Length: 518
Image (tube, rainbow, N blue to C red; front, side, top):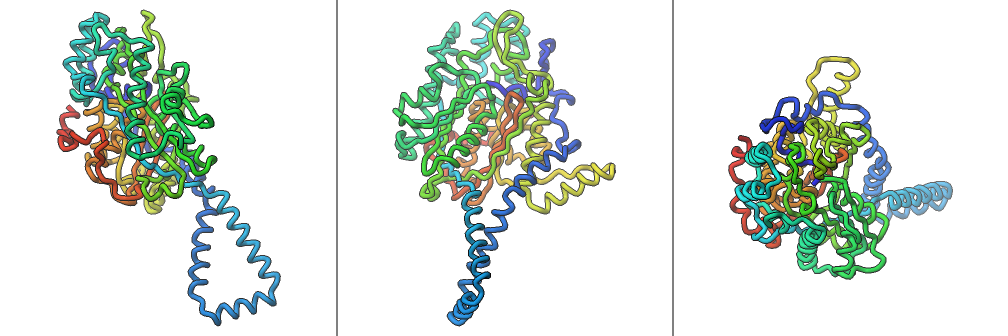
């Protein structure tokens, strides 16, 4: 439940006020007013580090094309020349061997996204907003000020009446316990994995890498051990359990799986992204801790990755880039999403009033690093020229905002809340269609933490919008404070799936987007 929750409501975190209108000082900053060159350098460093590979590929292609156009007489002349130029033969051979060796050793193995599955809870777990308020009142834990605060948050949250709560929170009084939290985790993880294995026909024994991320629920044995036990995974599986990393941990898990697939050949990796609500409901009256109650809902996703060459034929996407930004060295960023006890000893996740500004700073760093990697050269030149003029000549030049719509066809912005989606749409100069998936996911499923970007991708697929070659940008925020991006490229036209969480409701969307901005 960490990270991203407070960015959605735009509410004061000091507990003194009930209003939820976003104040100007709490909005995301203009990303490019104070761009640091060191973050631009990070992006270009990536390109330079791959320069040798980028140069070798076209050179080898030119050599092959020229050789294919030679006739027998040309080949005979080359042979005669080589017979009497032993030094040239040795030099050319050494160059070819060296170049081929460097290329093979430095070339990253492609990582394919074969399929993914988003968990959809049963209808019995739906939590309409009216039911939420009724239950909150009947628990007797909240005073009138806190109840009114939650009501206003919900009215402006962008959530609809079909989001889901875990079973334990439907009870009166709520019955959170370790056993109930385990049951929620199992329902989410096993529900998504059962669907994934059934769809792909991949045997659990074939999985070589398993990564699970869940921020606030980390039992012993671990969540990965639950999965290993349930599906009887093999004994030498590389398993990793990521905890406490917030809503951006889904991209971190993808990055970890990618690195493991660079080391271990010819295998599959499964990533499970989720959050657990049962034991992390806040029953106090500190308003900074009440916002997550209003935004977070049950959800999770299981993703099947592979480095097998044969999987390219049926895979949906290829992983192109992962860019991670961590602002934890700054004390304010470190504490802006913080799990702690309130004055009454009740545990919750406290959201700082500075969270929007901190999220904006992390995002600015992330996209400044990502830009040189993904933007067309024309956009890079315009951006870099205005940046140099502003930095070195001290001219009062309006920064050029790169058009990321030229780099990406689809955007999956973490559905942390309405405010952050609004601000990203404005600052990146996006159109309503570009943030439609994020808004509709927030409305239908709520903030499902690290898995929200997968519900959004499923929405875009459900609309039949993804074509071969399209690029998708997944971007997520999390406690720490972190901002992480993943870039995927579609390997084929992706058709709507019957296993999608949107399968029976996609025709009802998009709903009136304007209603989320009131």
